[in-house]
Each structure stands twice: as C-alpha cells, then as structure tokens.
Length: 110
Image 1 (cartoon, rainbow, N blue to C red):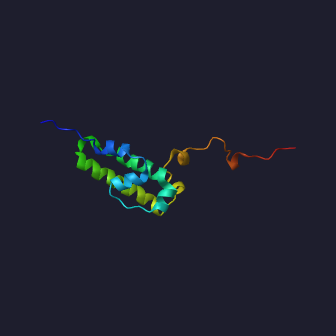
Image 2 (image 1 turned 90 degrees about the horizontal axis):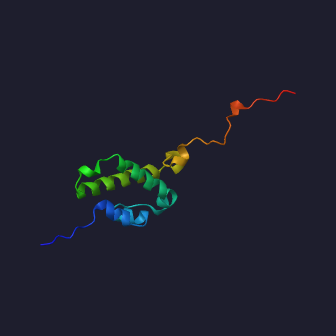
Image 3 (image 1 turned 135 degrees about the vertical axis):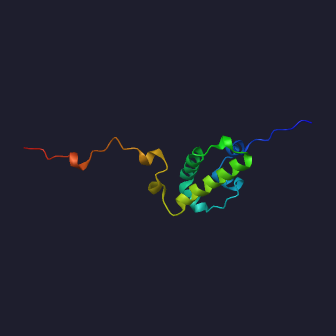
C-alpha cells in the first residue's frame, strides 16, 4: 500500500496567503481592527516565539499546538498595545543614524 505524504503544519501555513487565513487555520478568533493595525507586527512576533521552540522534536500535533500558542500570544501582545510600544520590528529598535543628541549642541561663540 502506498502512503501519500501530507504536507506538515508549517508547510500548510507557508502556503497560506494572509494573516486571516493563518488565524482560521489555527482555529483562533481575531478582531479585524487589531489585525489591520498590527498585522505585520503580529506575524513577526509569532515567528519570534516559534523560533524559540524546538519544533523538530515535536510531532505534527505538537507543532500545530505550538504555532497556535505562538500566534495567540503574539496577537495578545497587540490587543491593548501599539506596534510602536511593542517594538516588534527592527525599525523600532535600531538607533537612528541621522539624529544629534540635544546635549551635543553647543552655542557658537562670536
């Protein structure tokens, strides 16, 4: 008997094209307004949370549950907080090279 290999949870998630589809796939409810405001940040944070888990040591059910937990946690981070406050993206954590601290400004002697 030939067994047809089914794609794993992560493969199925990679095939999805929107955050809404990922929430649906992982059986999680969401508020569209929160998702509209922080979609990229939520997905990035979910990836950060998943990267901290040894998914190779889990079976597909375990991977599904960890992915679900990571998305639920990432979404919760942004329900009552803004992307700027959460600093999920590198943009918010990098020092800006084009600024001069106020303390560095000195009056010019005449």
